[in-house]
Image (cartoon, rainbow, N blue to C red):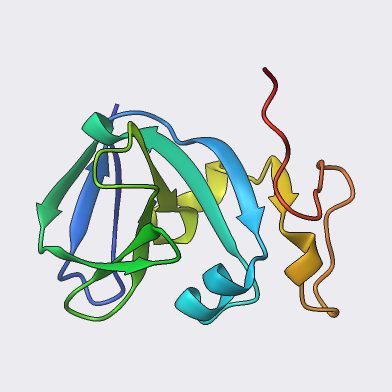
Length: 133
């Protein structure tokens, strides 16, 4: 299986070797500002399943995490907890065909813009859901 994606100008391209999981709409202020959008949809893949095929993402460390953008045009592509995180998050909108990846939950609603309408059929959280021990 290969799922392709890339930036707006085509200078950075990537392939996912597995389907993204944990599909979330993030409404936090950092995601909004970094993407210039009211929220960002993310999907997680194992780091080993993300292959950059063209270009080199620019990494920006901020708030103890790493956001990755296409160096050529600035498209927001990836999000990492650290350089050695097992999983990496991919912006679903940067996939060539994002239609099959509907969100499964919405997070950081405490930062949500007041005019954004949340899909009430998916779970939503004011911050991030607590992980089950």
